[in-house]
Length: 141
Image (cartoon, rainbow, N blue to C red; front, side, top):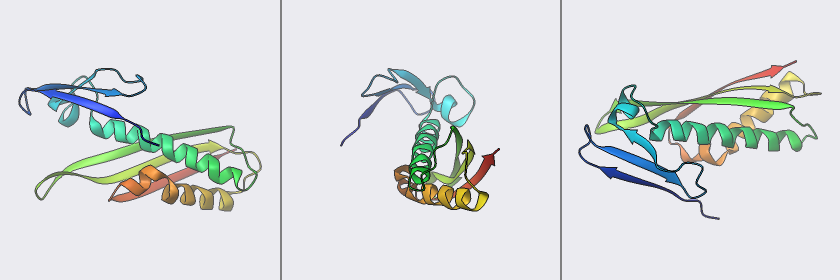
């Protein structure tokens, strides 16, 4: 199974601009730039796209972990924060933090935490990152 995304960049690193698109068309020519990546300009950036992908992947992985114990979430809400910092030789993603809140009828806290940890480790996007990934998982009554 292959999934595709594409990007076009024009101009210099600071004054240039680009567009990103996905094969499905969910993103179509979404603008990105130096300011949207390293400052607070309008448009998207690779790190926020990675964060959205990680949040989605983790939420699905957690749902799968719950199913393995015959549990079903009413709701799983995950936010991923991807940190990019200057490191030796340029910039690098130095940390990803997942914050998840879920309503899971019948789940006890110990099972919830174990399954959340399994989802963090097993999510394909987690496996992609070569950095520290932390998790705060909250079971909502």
